[in-house]
Image (cartoon, rainbow, N blue to C red):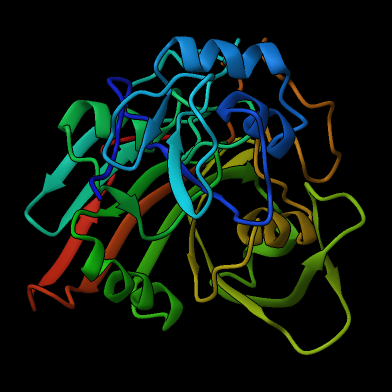
Length: 298
């Protein structure tokens, strides 16, 4: 079975046709299998050649339902936010690719984003269909993201992040705190858990499960530039920690106050002032020390 990627770098999804089901044709199967997608949308995907057999041949909606087989299909979006900023590939060999991601661009497809994602842009640019991220950063955050090229090696790179074997350094612009400056550098720890709102994390009582080394780089009037070195990798960890210290990151739309979600009309003039600046690790495949630095600045 070959990996199917279309001209826009979108990877096909797989679906299994169970033996305990029966449908007049393939179109009726997809309508029943994915009721949240309108029937006319599936009909259009068949017409556009977006439904394939396991060998990559386009299928018709009138083709018969064949149980115990797999098919492939491509996602399709009627509308998608356009992100007018470009990523940059700063390193590539036969094992990994390191990209410098702009603000606002998601790493992988989800929700409203399909083509306008770092993964699909890179697949289209490099024609490497097997590209896969070994870690993630928020859509709002800019900076370094590592992708594996050979699927069999991906777990080795992922394990570096799981085992805290990657030195990660971020930079952030946040308010300058006279009360806090005498405590810096400091390692802030807390326990972070999901809150009632899926977009926000919250600090709760209990043993800490996050830690961040916070250092002051420079003060610029009422604002300051901080160096953040997370030991752990919880969702929104850096944003939560600076917010808890009373210095929320500049232009943060989630902490301390969750603002209404912008779907299409994004305000590109106010990027979150958080940058994944440095990554350093021992390459588990090549055996060499790797150190990368973002070319971006806040």
